[in-house]
Image (cartoon, rainbow, N blue to C red; front, top):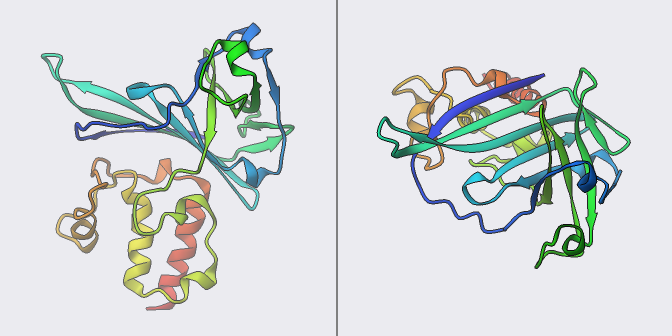
Length: 242
């Protein structure tokens, strides 16, 4: 199942540091790649597509057989005069995924991703200053195939970034106070721009965080399967402290 989220972020200057490789591929170009297949947990990480302001990323999360993917794109928002007034984040979530034979499939068995290796990038695509071997994924959307390079798993915002990347363990929640558990749980929603009750404890807490952008009234449809499982576990821990 796939869900798409749009929300605005303030105008600012982005430095994308790593100049990631990106291709929209035709049949000949696809033939230049080989494919790789390893354990599901090793697929986990962030893959980078595009350049500069057009750069977008995809997070692939695989833990204990639970697999989700999430694409994050930025688009400029213009006012009536054509001036940039902000950027729009477009988040697309794919849950209930499966991995087999080096590829990722949706619950309806549609091919979504294929893990690929490009050898000798300079010769195949006239790319300079790239390593001899580039590892990444082919992303199959409705009308094109794109290749993005694999990078390290992106650190999520907030005090508890692990709630995004892995399933929590009940034992690691035991030392936390009720307030800490409440923040941990609501931080998952806050990353999507969930609007908390004005003047409430969570509203006051997250408005102090520089990364928080309140924008939507319901973040539930955009949660990954791992985030949903972690929310349930945290809620269980909270109930035990009542």
